[in-house]
Image (cartoon, rainbow, N blue to C red; front, top):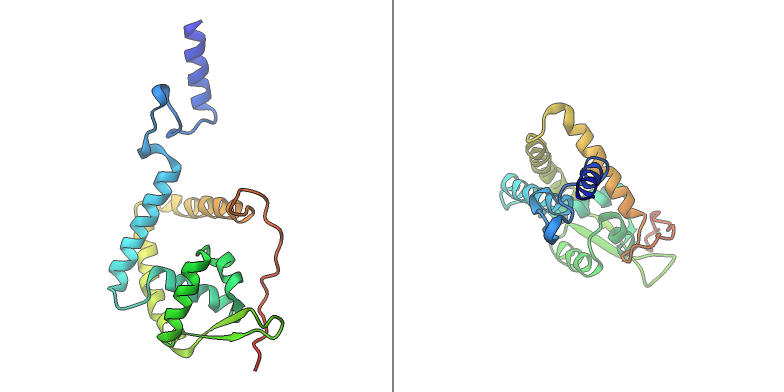
Length: 187
C-alpha cells in the first residue's frame, strides 16, 4: 500500500503538481515557488532599472504611468489604476508629485466633474523618452539570463498570467467590463 501511495505521489508530481507546492511535513521550497520567483524577478528588474536610470530619470512606477498615458492620454485616474495596476492611493500621490514637477497636467472631465483626466505634459514626454532607453537596457539585461529561444516564451507566459489576473477583481471574482476610453477634458 505504501508503495502505491509513493507511486501516486510521484505520478502527481510528474503530471501537474508544480515544484514549490506543499511537500511532506508541510515544507515549502521558496526556490521553486512561482509566486516567490516572480517577486524576485520583479526585484531584480527594479535594481536593473535603477542602475540604468542612474537616479536621474523617472522611477519605475513613474515610467509605468507615463507609458500608460502615452497610449491613454486624458485617461481618468480610476482608469489609470486599472491600466497600470498601481493602487489608488499610490497613484493619486504619484500624480500629485508629477504635477508639481511639471510632468503631467490634470483637468476635470466634461462627462463627470468629479473625475480627473490626466495627460502628459511636454516635459513628461521628454522625461519618458529618456527613461525609455534606461527601461529598454534593463529589460534586455533581465532577459539575458535566459537562452535566446526561451525569451519570447517567457514573456508570453508572463503575459498570459497578467491577462488572467486582469479578469479578476481584488477579491478573485470576475471583473465587470469597464469602458477605459479617453475622456474629454473640459476647457
